[in-house]
Image (cartoon, rainbow over the protein chains, first blue to last red):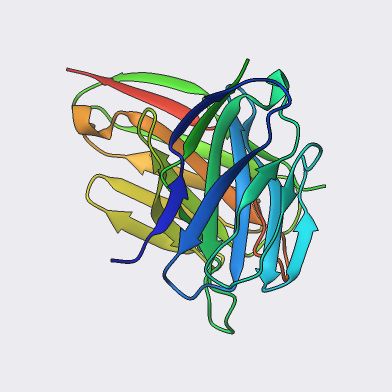
Length: 115
Length: 113
């Protein structure tokens, strides 16, 4: 089954404790992206990756890091989480081929609470 | 900067009624997407609209795209309770190579029995 898998799905942590949210897709997609969703603000892009070893900032990258060492994986790293990073996070992927539609496929989401 | 606006933000309707959700965007784009999100769940792709005049239908939902007006509509016919969810439109940056989508803030649809 084609899917985007995120872990953990739920996490409560404390300020300053480093954490990583993993994301893996099995569709051989080149493009992967992280979004955060907050009430009244919709979905905002944090980082994206066009392919292995190619990453770039989205609209709200402060406080986050990413890496793309393998095509299927795109982890989101919070080096020193703060309460304003409490949010619902989504990983998404899509194909970047010549006839691709650009349709994003989303993971199930990771709800993060930073105390 | 591409901005995407949806209206209404909240829609309460009775079963059996028809209604339309509007999605306006501020700059040229050739790709528009509609997603559905149930509370606490992921986003599910509903429609992909890739050209001016594109119309797609699935069950009680029909989406259309007018790139000249920079407008997409999601029409709901004879609503049923199962359609209650938040609906997002998302627009791709024109000519962009990044597959980046800009999302509207969503329309929360509540269908009352």
